[in-house]
Length: 159
Image (cartoon, rainbow, N blue to C red; front, side):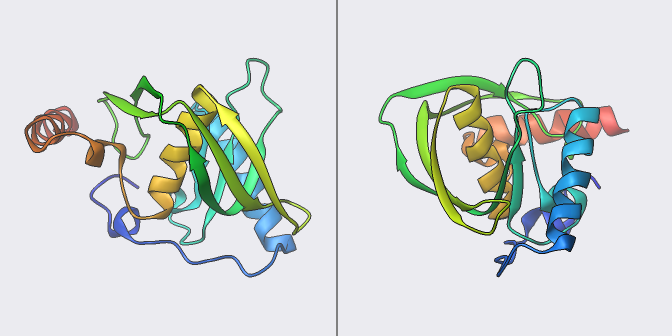
């Protein structure tokens, strides 16, 4: 499903509890993320309107953090620039500046509210995924001129 699909602009629904179905969705998301390969994925990217995300910025893989209803409790003042892209918006990428470190609260795979501190690529990825859960794309962080140029380039590539 590619942008501008409406699912990518829709705020995802809260997950009330962790069920067998939620665990199956996470497994599907991890398989899709690893196949890309990517460092994170949000359920809306697969057309699933739930506040579910997975993040794995490890070198070896297999360190995936499964999150339901993630939210940022604290973000560092120090920023980090990283070239971001999305499989839903193929062929283009842009350098985005985001907080270098974040504290994230989420419901874990055991259905317990948890929090973790993420730094660097892990922090960038979780912020990118939370944007997806809120119906935003990474290019929404660009100036209007840069965003319009990126969209024009993506449309040209798509043919």
